[in-house]
Length: 199
Image 1 (cartoon, helix red, strand yellow):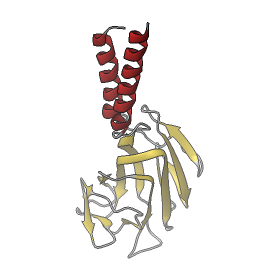
Image 2: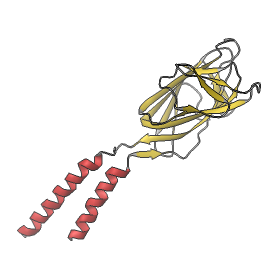
Image 3: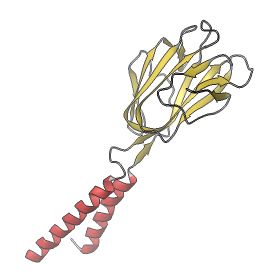
Image 4: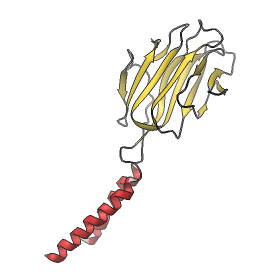
């Protein structure tokens, strides 16, 4: 093995450690995979997402809280994630999303953030057809949970969770692995040179 090939090998090992920090999923995933609490789906980046629910029912290709009851959604991920987005529909201006285990980073569309802990309500008086997204970014977690409901009229609520996307999983080989791989590569190179001198 030439020195040039050895250097290329070491460079490749370093790159493997330094560039494998995150794995993004390009897919937008609806809830056709969900039939009961505990059902899961594997994304295009290999991440498994499990949805545990309480008082939730199917709604087309989405899911929603049972009418008049607070629905609890818990997403569990097979690896720690840094980013996640859920897309909502059928939101009235008296319906909210609350009890977040991790506060969202932002909201979009017809949703606004109010109070602490964050509640989400429609900004427009469009009846039952408001839409928007709840976004988490720069987090580090294996679990996200929240509750759907109607604070002012508890017996009259049903928000649709239509899909999720923007999932970025932390790699099984974290960025600092480059620090470990570089000395290992140097040690292998030194051992090779010693062997080469001995023969």
